[in-house]
Image 1: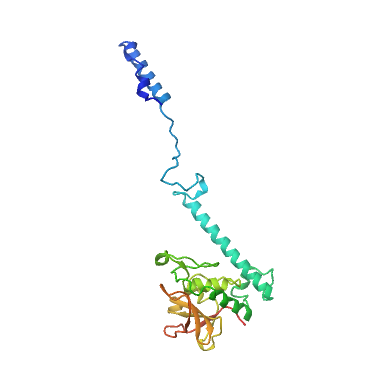
Image 2: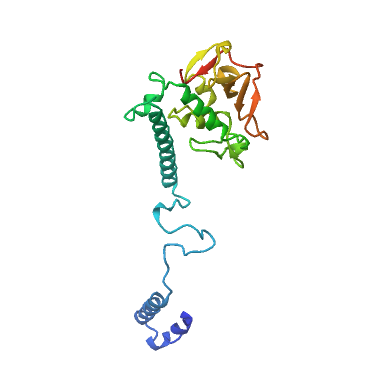
Length: 248
């Protein structure tokens, strides 16, 4: 397209004379020409290096759309939780431990899951993650995940993420934080601990937890730099009680 100035030069203001009215008419014509020949401008930014991957749709989760991003995150979490709980209930139904029509709350306090088979499945599920990296804040109901803060660069589990993953396999939805898990079951003296009980350390179980395997052994996600492993039980700093989530 030729420069706009080339079009405007064809209008000679002198042809309108020197009267104020004619000068006004000349200015009006020039403005009209500018509006006609100016290139159209879109209010929507063109595709470019600023955001080459996002589609131009309101639901794309583009920067500046925090509501869409939050809704998508909540929906994904809800789907993952429901999937894990359904798998757990199906497993228990197959063992005859839980009826297929049981509500999701059937595995929580007040209507507990029972059975040695369920405990063994929890332990086996945790064991499938041996060797997976420790990641602070990592772990979902369906597997390892990227952690938060100092664990943001690692896909794996922290201590409560591992126990939550293991118990979700039989439909037991534990709280995310170890301190809350300490109050999620029946408290038992350590001398009466059984296979599958949860062991805790720190005030109110706030520092660490593991799954007791029996024979003085436990499976744990211990700390950054140490993968999930089976360890001897450490009694130093342990809480006064262990927690039994699944009764036998």
